[in-house]
Image (cartoon, rainbow, N blue to C red; front, side, top):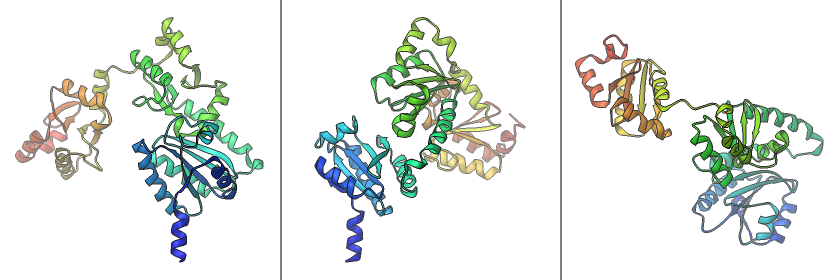
Length: 335
């Protein structure tokens, strides 16, 4: 009986009306309440429902709810739910955090953080504000050019962010980005910090340049190229990468986890030599993956470099090992 009760408590509750939702907010006011706004037509939502079920088992002291966004529009509109999946976090019947998108690791981190922290009290609100200001300063200075956007450069999640990324890429501007959907505290706090109410926002050396309209104006006046740092040309970047360590291996995966049989075999050979080497995962960077083929005139991976010079792929390395030449080559003695 006790086990059955525990299992029931750990289940994800489905809410079908605004009234039921408000009642749940009131009843679960003392604990953390995590609400998944979902849609049956979105496969990523089904996946995240599974994540919610696992989290409910791990955190029995918290409550987990799923609410079909389009079936309860009054709740979705009240909390500005514009896409699914979206997760809201409540304590003391107040919304304390938000996560947009199917980010299982981020959802897990937020649940762990909020479940372990005590109840939020108004008297303790001053210190988090100071901490947030310091955090925002660090984030805006995280790279010479920082873009705060909805989504990522690879997958922008609004038209304005998409246009901003296209302009920056067109001008070969080197920038890092922060997905404001991944952190509600940053999303809201940066509006006040920068006194700029909308996204995307572009910063250079920690100073706000502006949003999309400002960037378009700077592009039209040809000032954009003078304000933002340029990305190195691909050839220069490849030269730096191939010389990053005395022995550099470009592979699928990394030292800890090879993602193809050829890469795994070459790792085993290199590890057996005792020579120190660095790796670059070509699966993480499509530009490098394609560009290095032309740069080295070598069409396949893995590729091994010593002092910036291509040695070859797996077959060459096997031949060098068989002839006893591999160790001198890796040490740069006969290369």
